[in-house]
Each structure stands twice: as C-alpha cells, then as structure tokens.
Length: 124
Image (cartoon, rainbow, N blue to C red):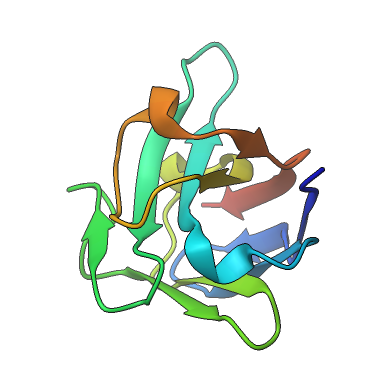
C-alpha cells in the first residue's frame, strides 16, 4: 500500500513563499508520476503541478506557472512544491498524489493514491 504524507503548509503573507513536501512510502516511488492539487472552500479540487517519474518533465496550471516549481528526489521518496509570490487566491488545502504511470498528467482521474492534504493560507 502506498501512503503519502504532506507537510510544510501554514499561514503566509501576500507575496511570501512556502515549500510543501510529500513523503511517499513504498519501494516503487520512482515509477510514479506525481502531482499536486488544491481545493479551496466551496470549490472543486484543481490541478496545480505534475512531474514525470524521472523528473525531466513538468506541467503547471496557468494560474501558478512561473511562481510554483515542482521537483522530486527519488532517493528520498519525496516530491516538493516550491511556492513563491503567493496570493490570497492560492489559499486552499494542497494535496499530493501519485499516478501509476511515467508521464506527468493534469488529469485528476489518472491519480491512484492521495495524501490527506495540508492547509495553505495566504493573508492579504
């Protein structure tokens, strides 16, 4: 069974930065594509960023492109989301997800395992 645990969320001011981490249990982490999604109150869960199994390919939502960076360390079974120039509209619960495929994808339905989420709140 694959388990994902997010950390690094919190309260930050407008324009600030946060780095989210997601630790993944299991020996086959390097074979999974990974993604970050978020869900704000009253809204559907939406794609944020994804990374291929090797880390060579990344994919971002337009709303975060240029501000957020996804990366992974396969030796540490961890995926990261560096978030810069944060805005109040970035406030949401952020979820890490793993897909049993090599290519990065924005499609929520392609992901097989999910973490519990970590709250990010950006004050204006």
